[in-house]
Length: 345
Ligand code: NAD
Ligand code: WQD
Image (cartoon, rainbow, N blue to C red; front, top):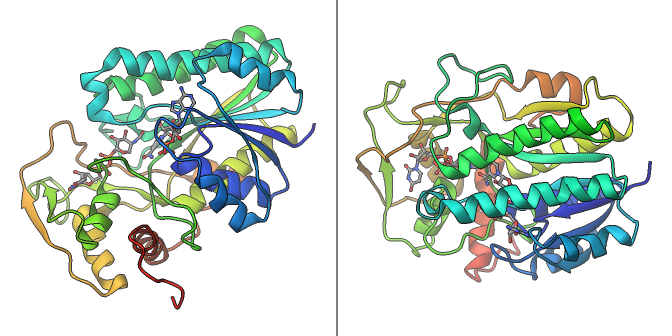
């Protein structure tokens, strides 16, 4: 099996870091992205890190004809499908856009895999499919609950579409990676997260507050039934998360899959509270963050973290970066975005 990989959504946050890992592992990458939530300049960052400029096609995964032109070039052996809209709140306001984008894009990809005999796909799923588990940590057997948002529902539906397609068509293998909370940036600070507008996620809000772009970080709720009263998540370093995709592809190409559709949790196995993130961020970066504690955010899960042992055992993949390194990289990236000289760091 060849090493050509089509990476949809490859200029996005997780996609760009994964492309770096893929190139460093010897894969030949073609990126397709409609740039709806990313910038083409990310390609420069990837090239600066790896010395290799991946092929980039600006196209929308909802447009099957545009996608097919890429498949017809015949250089694709596998696919990593990141392309999706991901803002939870926006999905509540615009459910049809989310269903249309996230589901049609996947259907197009699977249809073209069949038509062009491309057998392998890694799919970006999410711990959001677990909702609030009754028992922690969450394993892959933890029941999926009814989704809290249309976005979350698209992940559940996409997993089901993949499961049914793999079963029916026989010619497709797929691995769904259920990511926990990815944070941080490449240690070079040449690529990182590029949130548009006011960030919804914790880490970009923290770094933008530290940089003075946001006045104050609101911490949503201190009265949860957790050791310090704050919500708990499993924050996974973006570079570690990216490496999990290479491990998943290697497994497929080496013929090591035990079933033709497999699911893995990708997290650290450690639950960390929102306040622990804030305090550790302050400590490792030597600064003070302006924050206030406000009421709970509607729909927030109280606590979730992963049991990653299945990925550890089967993929040989482990989360390696410390929270210190990750929070350092997040701040370094924010400083670079703000044009602050980080050359001595
Ligand atoms: P991102 O928005 O940075 O990346 C997604 C990329 O897909 C963007 O570059 C966007 O322009 C592109 N895109 C969107 N719709 C497209 C379409 N129709 N055609 C072509 N390109 C399209 O998001 P991310 O954080 O890198 O997330 C990547 C994947 O991982 C998504 O599927 C997301 O749902 C999933 N995920 C993300 C998280 C997270 O916390 N970031 C957690 C779990 C799962
Ligand atoms: C983390 C913690 C907040 C912002 C979301 C999606 C989920 C998945 C991951 C894709 C929570 C707290 C946050 C702020 C805060 N994505 N927080 N102040 O909610 O775990 O999950 O991203 O699949 O689907 O829902 O991530 O980064 O928004 O929040 O106190 O300004 O930080 O309450 O406890 P979340 P998050």
